[in-house]
Length: 338
Image (cartoon, rainbow, N blue to C red; front, side, top):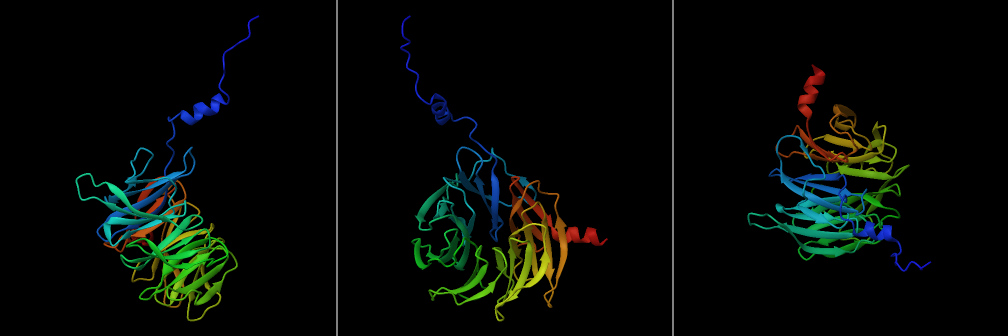
């Protein structure tokens, strides 16, 4: 019998898989939302369940109604890694993006009819995912925090790191928030610490609080008080003039993921590792009242929240279900009270 001289390539199935370009699209998981005062919306997304762990952002005008983002939508900016946070840089035609690769990038939109986005600058100085960004000086200085435990201050005109707080925390820094009317800012980490920093000092000004579990998010309520949420689902408030334990406001059934404070008010929105959006109001004696609660608009975890600067009663949320939802807080409260 003649020998079979047909050469079968090794790992044929793997080769077919590598060369196959069909069916690579996956569900877009919306991770955050930012609103510009002119109504432009920035929505960041990650695709972490398919063959390629990519990400991107959509920059679009607010339509005043629910809008669904699905896998057929074309991103305004496509990234080679996921993105956990981002923000506008003064005008709606320039954005700063945080990437899971450790990169920070600046993108601008052209003025032509196509409105294409191009990458101006990109620097990868974080050693792990960049998890949070906030504005220190509008259009000039921005702060990023990463899963590598580092916090960096950037001059985004040239995208140069002008201050590196190496090992600011011993674990991932989930959140950073700039104190109103100052050049100080607070960071919260999974190492259970909330620290206060000054951009002109290499060491933390102080450790404001040592929590009993990891910090997931924090936001300033005013110049002296900040609100934070943790892995245990507890929302607390603390006064930096009296460092120590925070005062418990309310406990949720899941870890608190994001807080959005309505500027100039004591009103804040909260989302956890579930499908519910809650809006609360903090009284002068640090008590909390729930004025809105909705767990029906989203079918997946809610990940991002942002208030509409043009209407104090309108809140937008995005989640892993690919939905961007509009909440009329005042309308809901009226229905519940009636």
